[in-house]
Length: 283
Ligand code: SPD
Image (cartoon, rainbow, N blue to C red):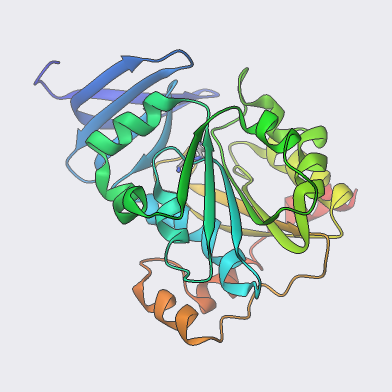
């Protein structure tokens, strides 16, 4: 691998988002091209098929927002399903909750896990050694289909942007299956793309979840290395959800240990829907 610094860009609809640095690995798996680069400001960063996924410096913006609004507000959270999440960041945030007894992480591409463990080991951290974490190399859509009804208390969808091989993770049929395997008081949390750089996909996810679940709420924050920076996460349930209930000691302790997420941040983030999105959802 070249020791010279070079630019690696994510191209997105006439814009590009680049990081400069030394490429540590460039590997073609059965599913996608995987690159890890070492950047001066963001540290090591992972790119899959031309899209930035995460970096050591900014990953907490993403993983803390996907996990804590759901887990901190739930009373029952024994069984957790993570779809995707092969870098381990989502699992790392989950293991902070003592009530969780089992986490199934279903990642289609084994190479993403291997490369993350080797080059980005801080992201998964202790999760990789946690007895509650069960890794399954499988297709998330198939996994959900073969799971019995009312099984998971939490489903966390930590997927890439829509593409030929991830499209189904954004479909009504998949969300319906998720609804089926979720417990009655359970919460589904999904990254729901950007209201700016992925506006149509964002609106389509929100409309689907609103149609299929009794309640769904979206929060907005930033992921600096993603196209346009502004990002969203949506939380849905068959029951009425109270996403601001962080009142037990464990949650207060978790809140103190977070870099980005806290209750105030979350409450504000749920009120950040840009008006153009509000209007399109109402039209
Ligand atoms: N534009 C990139 C969206 C990717 C979301 N998933 C990131 C995976 C981090 N665990």
